[in-house]
Image (cartoon, rainbow, N blue to C red; front, side, top):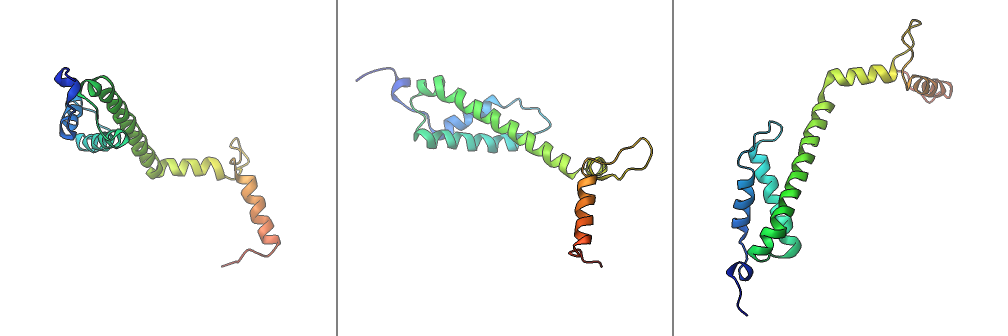
Length: 137
């Protein structure tokens, strides 16, 4: 059966990697460096290849595979950005102190009310003291 070459041959793994990387050549987001983007691209290309055991023909790759891989790369990049943001917030000592203040502050008799978890922690502490399960140091 004869047909156009692009329906007969399939792209190699290297070709697909190079093709997807060229889509991200002008990457200039400060949240993710280009090296991390290339690692994510490799991961997504491998996932796509392992899912179908091939990239199909050049025509099939250009029609379906290319867009699918780009979509997966963008999803993984967004997840990486969210993960970095969560780690940054988690490590921020000012934010941690503020959250602890909001949750556990005792009432001061003025305008500031007790923290959200203050009553529960206080009652738990008092019940432990009353049951003598609390060890004094």
